[in-house]
Length: 269
Image (cartoon, rainbow, N blue to C red; front, side):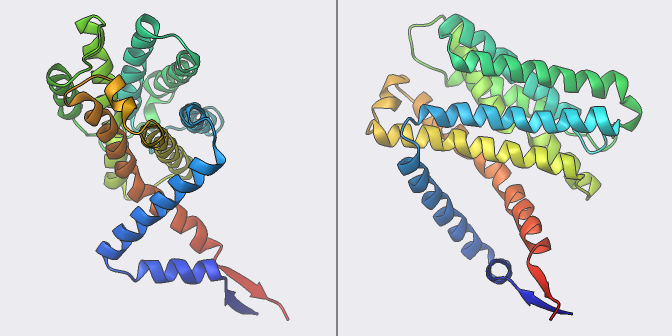
């Protein structure tokens, strides 16, 4: 029985041998190519934002399956779920008072699912929760996000409290996954369903980032002006890029592991 490498496996092996700078360059090129591809196949770029929310909801559905079928929350960060519920609740409030659309419905469904996950971890499956590994201090992200929101927020005609809330949820969403990544770093083991969930977050963040980047390109920068003046438009775009890059490394290793495990086929002749 002889193993033969697939071309994809050869490519992945070559990428692994490259120095970090080359890998970073390849990641940027791949991202740009993906943006160009999406721009030509998706005519209404607002659909990308809807798709991002749908993928996020799918990731949470994977968690719910894990919690209800396997009866364990091992490997899950309760703190990431708390942050997710917080920014979703704030964004939902902003959506109700500032603009009610399809995103409001999607955020409502995602918030309900997230609250269910929190309930399961806190009360039903508490004995399997890795509280000692989930040790990321939330004030490291909540306080800086609140301060940044006070300093840089939309310059629209809405109430100042609403503008602050809008900025706060944008910044908090960008870093909400950090406790989950910290927990996985502490345990050194990534449980499969948790890996699927984090990968779904990465895909959702990329789609959301693609939505903003393509909207800016299509409007030739007018979208940034519509968001207001000062630093706020740039901070919105920067937040999308930051959260995409936070998850990019994990997504790379997730895909690599999936491809490497399928990189060999056996010739029985």
